[in-house]
Length: 159
Image 1 (tube, helix red, strand yellow):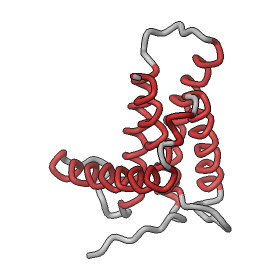
Image 2 (cartoon, one colour):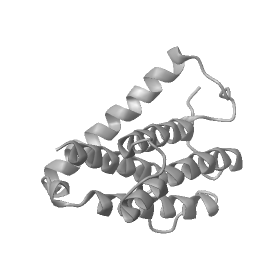
Image 3 (cartoon, rainbow, N blue to C red):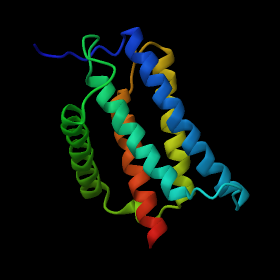
Image 4 (spheres, rainbow, N blue to C red):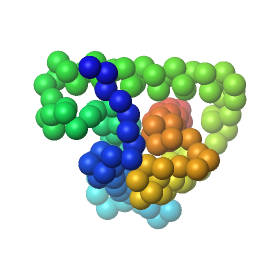
């Protein structure tokens, strides 16, 4: 039985909106620390970017599920789904990096954080519109872009 993507299904949008809100919390914390120049909780920013990556992959997995799929899955089922989305997103990163060059290396981490926040606002808008878009990339493209910007941020922070 082939699973179909139906972004308008209310139950899926509800699940996605919770994941999107978790991503928003992490991105907002990063931006707040960048603005204030200090933090009060010891959790480092790179951990927040890792959280953004993982939540985005979970959202991509969620988009592939149907109403018939269980709410909880064994790791043997979940791991190939996770790896598949990571590989697809990495392919996108490599293709975009080819086309744009390494322009991201000249960007500020704070600018990329802003881009992640803008993409989150767009995803929230799509979710609030029950998954319907007029002219836009889909939710999945925005999640993949957020993953890639988070990866770029982590690379820049280590250099």
